[in-house]
Image 1 (cartoon, rainbow, N blue to C red):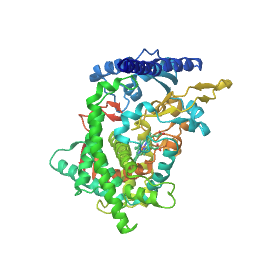
Image 2: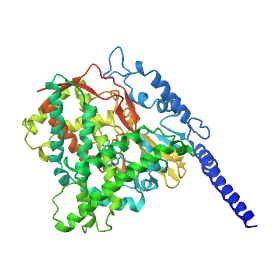
Image 3: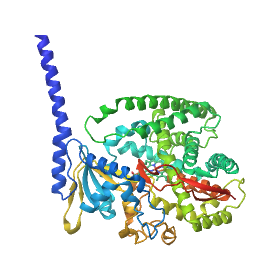
Length: 536
Ligand code: HEM
């Protein structure tokens, strides 16, 4: 009798599981699809359970197969003016945009995505009070957990607001000034290595590789004060890099039900490495807390971790202290969110300056004028702040090659978007939004006929928007309350590294460089950026 009851119980539990699976994987997406169609959103036809992933994969494979002939010209020429980076990195979006316009719906597995490359629509859907109706997509949360944990990038609601209030002040101009020394010291090491290579006759350098490694070291030192001779720090740094490499390789079927089962080994590996990193960071943080307590606030460290510890203990941030666990996640967030993005901005800049020697010379002159020519003298924040032309160049590079090529949201509630002619459109709760930053940044209807060209002077006329015809058309750091918290740190690091480099070397494009930008989380070169360096 008891055996029968247990059997019935197990069958009922299984049936319940099956029903909830059918609801989540099939019925609920089908209802959302109907509602999106009724609201007037068109798009390519999805199939169950992969959505539009097969078409995305096939388009990318076709592009990769013909990649030998697909290198783009760096500059348009009479024989080849196909400089359309957007079509090269997102061929499927480029095709769907032609068919369905700048706003449409596509599906990753059973997850609906509202594709947006129209700044007017974006404003109508997110401005003012509507901003609160959008959170971060659940579908990416699990995949990104090993990198960001519950850090600021992933936090929601009151939790996010509390963390942001404690973290934002750490990135103030005054605090960042104290990090210039670390940036200068680390960069000097990289430049010395390049100098040795050039002196030994190896003048062609993959600058992307060096700049990424340099940025990783800077962020590790700036975030949690890891010194060159710090053993625990060095271990955590190597493991963070290993985790980055591993997550990078796993090409997951986002949104496809049960697809995680295909990646059990990688998921386990990421989890194991994640636990090791967490344990090392916890030790570092606990030791720092103890040191702070002994020195009674007299700690001389000026890294982000110290500032967060101080911020979460001071009266200004007294709503709540960040726990050690939360601090671990924030340190990881700074590492994964902060170094590669900054390094890519710098790498693409070096390429642009190599291809536009007149701008390279302009910046070199500006550095000599404002910062001085002594390569060993300490840099100061005021002088770096006067590098106006360098600021235009940074904005123009972030426009043409935004390291974060998209921004994502998910509707926490039904969102009513006011459309033309009083036709309100309802975006159903749970719908994800994919803002195609690359498409908007290269749209001739927003930027003019020279949209594909490198013209930093557009930011001389309009330093904030670069002359973009719509307010939300330039979004290298995202938008709204969730705009990148680290953008001032990036601006500072960019100026330090570029000023030091331009004083020491001239750069030109090496014959082996192939211009094949691609997207793997970030917008990056396919095989490094090879430049010829000439010592000055
Ligand atoms: C060129 C460099 C960088 C780029 C292009 C970039 C881009 C972005 C973008 C697009 C977002 C999402 C904004 C949104 O959802 O609307 C973001 C958020 C964020 N970034 Fe950056 N970022 C850069 C540098 C950094 C640095 C140096 C750090 C820290 C050290 C950092 C930390 C963060 C954090 C913590 C968030 C989450 C903010 C929140 O949700 O409140 N980023 N960044």
